[in-house]
Image (cartoon, rainbow, N blue to C red):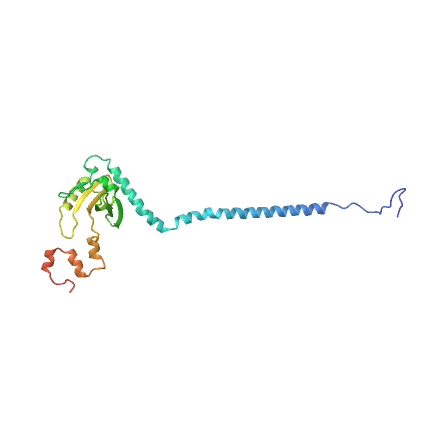
Length: 228
């Protein structure tokens, strides 16, 4: 041990403490905080992206919404096509009434009528139309795909033949309309339904079905019940 002249006593090997451990701890803590921040940001971004992915599934899910909008879009399409057909010159731009049928309404009144969907068949769609003069008619919109091969003249001849048909169980043809790809056929409206529903419906027996389907002179030849 040595004494310094005029100075305080200082032990040998006494050096100031190093700051390296504090620096290492600070860097480790900062790196840990950075990693946690990155993980939290990634989780938040993933959660916010989930509603965007599930939104299309919710929009495509309900079939009921499709069925409800199907009828209204079909009616709108019918009106649009008929309005386009009104621009065609000549006979195809108006309703053509059958011989003996009074012209109680016009095409414009038919377009303004409130339509109710009655049935869809292989040849087209049937509507119940209530006109502004309180007249109710049955309108059948023929399928454009099935009628595409039928020319205008052939369709007019066919409608002339149909207009001449008469039978107690057959509703006579009132009028028809054709323009471009649109063809409509008008009949009197009967709330009891069509002959097809009466024959093939489950409410009637076999005798009732034959009574509706067969003409009177045929039933006179076979007066006995046909199911025996």
